[in-house]
Structure formats: structure tokens, C-alpha cells
Amino acid sequence: ELYKQDPNLKGLVLDLRNDPGGYLEGAVAISAAFLPKDALVVSTRGQLPQMQEVRKANRAGYMHGEGGNDPLADLPAALKKVPLIVLVNEGSASASEIVAGALQDHKRGVLMGSQTFGKGSVQTFRELGPDTGLKITTARYYTPSDRSIQAQGIEPDVYLDDTAEGDVYGALRTREADLDKHLAGANEEERKAREKARDEARRKLEEELRNKTFKPLPEFGSDEDFQLRQALNRLQGKPVKASATLKARPVESAEAEDGADKPRK
Image 1 (cartoon, rainbow, N blue to C red):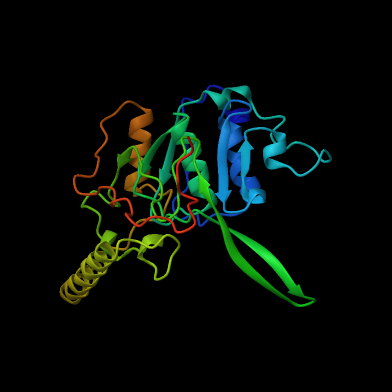
Image 2: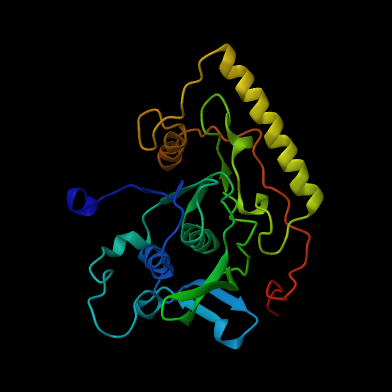
């Protein structure tokens, strides 16, 4: 629809902030809309041979079987080259992280925002009876450059605060690595340090709220959306106010028990 209105688009912003994910096929399809045909989008690896899978930017990667119309068949060819900014944050999880990782690895777009949630595990449903079943974790997702998403997430190319005043609520946000008993357990000391920092930030914020009124974060897509403004500035060649404080969290040091995280030779 955008191309019908203006076939000479100068750039696009793909907003994946607070996108908790969805179907794998959807993630592959969105990636395929911007990537060259047959480009690697994501791979899965687990202990069992049937859990080894590769998805590419083609019909077979995002559709089951030969029937049905290809939803990407009529997309403008210019989508493969239009300048692209991808906005991400701690709420970007699972399928949205697959999209972000694929576009970043293929250098198809610039990621801006904060480190994503880190939900990179694959769940499989096993039927136990007519009305019962069990969902178990069977594999992990890997980006085209063989980065594991699980508990680490995707780092943006440009870190952005939530507002011009800074990352007001950053310490309060929870990611996969903060959850108890998450897959490929985090370094315990690092996890405790993050919990302590979050508790201290919460106490400080509660104290400040008692003394003055805090403005809520602006609605995504509004004129007051600081991160979106920075994304548009980047597309327009204007100065971008990158975060002076945000940085990537350390990579987890614990080795995966099942060996699924070992890089391919």
C-alpha cells in the first residue's frame, strides 16, 4: 500500500519493539520480503537429527506444501533494496528476534534500540492422550552467522535510550537471562547482580514517584516517540542521539549441557 502511494520511498522503519513473536513461518516470510531469494534466514539445532533444520528466504521456507498463493509473489522488487531501519527492545522476542538477526547478519538493515529478550529456544508439542499433551524444549535458533539467540538476544547496531532524558525504566525490564531455570543457565553471579541492580532501580524510581510526577513513556509511533525520531533521522542523514549508557549484557559463560550451542565447523 505504501508503494502504491509513493513508489519512490526513501526508506522504511520496521518496528519490532515489544513484539513477543509468533509463528516461525511468519518470521521467515517477513525476512524474505527484504532479503535476496534463497538467503539463509534461520537454522535450528538440537540433540536429535530431526531437530536440525534450515529455513531460507523462499516459498518453501515460509509455506507448507505447494498449494496456496505465495503472499510475497506481488511485492515490489524495490523492497529488497530500500534503506531499512529495524527498531528493537527488550520486548522483542522469539520470531521478531529471528527477523532482526537475519536482517542484521545479511547487512540488510540497521538495528536500533536495545538488546532483545533472548528467547531462542524451540518448543515441540508431544501428544500424550486424547486431551493431554506436553510441550518440551527441543532445539535452539541460530542466526545466519551462527549466533545463538537463546538468553543472549540480538544486539542493536545503534543503542538508543527510551527518551531524550535517558533510559528511565531500563533497569526494571526483564529478559530471558533473568528468568529462573531458563535454558542454558546464566552465570549465577551475573544474574544476582542484575537482580540487585533492578531492585535498587525500582526503589529509586518509587522514591522519585513519591516526590514528583513521572511522564509515562510516549506511545510507539507518536510524535513524541524518541526512538522512532532517531530512526527517521538516520534515514534522512541527520544526527542521531545514541545512548551513552546502554551496552550489551555479557554473553553467558555456562556451557550448554546438550552441546547444541557448539558452533558448526
